[in-house]
Length: 361
Image (tube, rainbow, N blue to C red; front, side, top):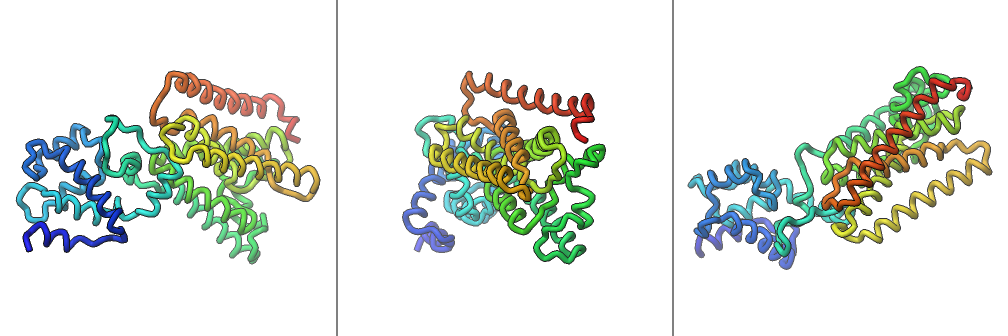
């Protein structure tokens, strides 16, 4: 048994069937040979450092390339053969999220390949970035859970429907306390009812984190927070006596921002028309039910204005902030138009609060 065969036997299959493993090897072989400039069957560590520094490893995940320098040279000969390279690809955390990557691939757009016809190392993984890690939506979600648990413990309300808990009292949007401006944002951490919290968490984790992997945490955070602020602003303007709790404005912003990315990256998306249909049906149905209930049930407390305002903000800010993977000339004009509309509307809303305070009492 030669050295190469020993290496192959030592590689864990990592839940790959034979066909998937062969496809993985072919993809990695293509990348390996591309950077093996002298075709000697090895990657020189010095050359790899230069390639990474010059940002020429466009079709190799940066995390993999950097980790390659540290771990892949198992025999300390200053160079990496293909089996070392392949073994690392199976051990590296970037490739351990196979199911989540497949999910993300179906949800968000893959990067447009620079070279037409290249068969690259995991086309979708190239667009995903694990550093900085996608933690913003997770952090928001953890804070929402903590606030919810604190209020349950303090009020002894097992359903979590009370608004008298310490966190709700301090952070909920209270129309009688508009001068406490932080409430226009912090109401997102307060949830009334277990299902209210769970539904928002599901969207934040499954859609929000997926968007962070492709678009970077700060872009997604801007969209989310823009939706939250727009939700409280819209509620304050159109239903000035309504209290507001929950992250639904931000959640709707994520959904409609994703709809914006579907439109802007139509050719780069998988199942674009299916996704557009599903998310549009969800938004229209949920908003329709909320509006219907608010009209026919005087005791219904769902702030549909916050949902609608967050949805509009997410669509506008999503066009302006989330990455457009292949920019067309008309999309640049749409970008400026969307961002301008959002800021004009928000500034007008703020000014109205100062110019006509009697409207709110």
